[in-house]
Image (tube, rainbow, N blue to C red; front, side, top):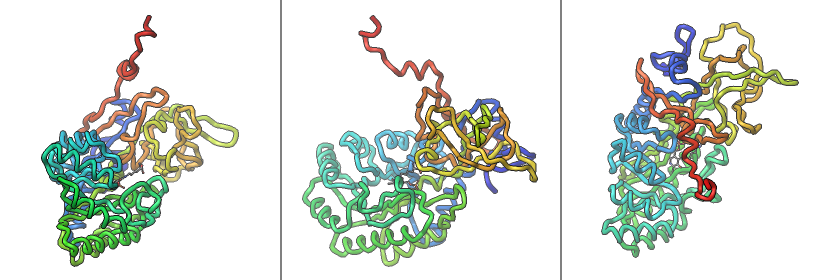
Amino acid sequence: MSAFEYRHGQLHVEDLPLENIAQEVGTPFFCYSTQAMVNAYNSFSDALAKAGVKGTICYALKANSNQSVIQTLAKAGAGADVVSEGELRRALEAGVDPKKIVFAGVGKKPSEMAVGLKAGILQFNVESLPELEALSAVAQKMGVTAPVAFRINPDVDAKTHAKISTGKAENKFGIDIPSVRNFVEQAKVLPNIAVESLAVHIGSQLTDASPFKDAFARLASLYKELQNAGLPLKRIDFGGGLGIQYKDETPPDLSEYAQAVSEAMQGLDAECIFEPGRFLVGNAGVLVTETIYVKDGTNRRFLIIDAAMNDLIRPSLYDAWHDITPLKQPDANTSLTPCDIVGPICESGDTFATQRPLPEIAAGDLLAMESAGAYGAVMASSYNTRLNAPEILVKGDQYAIVRKRVDYDTLIKQDILPEWLSK
Ligand code: LLP
């Protein structure tokens, strides 16, 4: 059963009509379902168990780092994949076990490394020699050993949007396979470094299993080779990237994904790490918005809504599709009109959909932008001095505001006037 469905003619999230929440908190707002997140986590973990794979699911916080979301997943058993000191602090604050935290990203600063070392996290996914040297220096200064995974760049085409593809040689990510041996030699001479793991992440929103299979096979064969050469590796990190359905994609199902992992793990004795983000939260959230005006242009109808690209940038940035669903269930035989759904921001790029067939919508009607649980609120800004869309978490028939809408005063007062202007 989906967490978002029509009941009695109203779109519900779990046991609550979204319209009731809209009346109480105002629009636009993000709304997440606890049940959908926990179900996604459990199905991921069950699929791995069925395929005989043992591992830790380190939720990629970048997808949605609301404290309540992190804590919901941590309670279900998740660790965390973090990419900044901020995310690391969030994970620790949410009670994630440091031994289930991996620190990824190409540009960790020494100060950020120090926070991770102090917390005693599971591993740093290292992507360059200067980064390895910096980590060694910080660890030496602190008198601790840094657990390291080398993130490899397997040169595999993830067949996803270019802006979220990370595993090709021309991408800034990872270490190319021929250079890894050199990294291993360097690591031997650098103090306070323990190379324990290999990692890979080739991109996000993958809808085809074959790039996963290719990348995992390359990772596994390198793992064997280095282990045979005497490197005491103990973990293998398969990254994230599993796609979800936004429109009519058919992402690999979980058993196919788990099978790809299990095949790569044949003959390997290693703990596995996974870094899913979107899969756990993407379809667990919607962005609810109100239609402000219906504008009939020369040759098209615009629905001008109160959400904008500053709230959900994915359509503007990646031409991403999000289903747009009226909160009030339309009649089964209603006729559809193609509409452009646009926000109030002063850019033509502030468009959520073009020529999208929708039932008759009037000003004041509420709409849900679906699959907005991942890379929605976290990528929001206050462009055009718009207030943030608050975040709501639902569990059964209860809801809580888990991030409030700041007020204009707070927003404007973040700016500080220099003394010379106040004279
Ligand atoms: N691990 C690493 C090292 C990553 O870079 C990412 C995502 C993940 C895990 C999680 O990937 P996921 O399971 O969510 O696909 N803003 C874009 C997505 C950017 C993904 C960046 N890295 C979007 O809205 O589609």
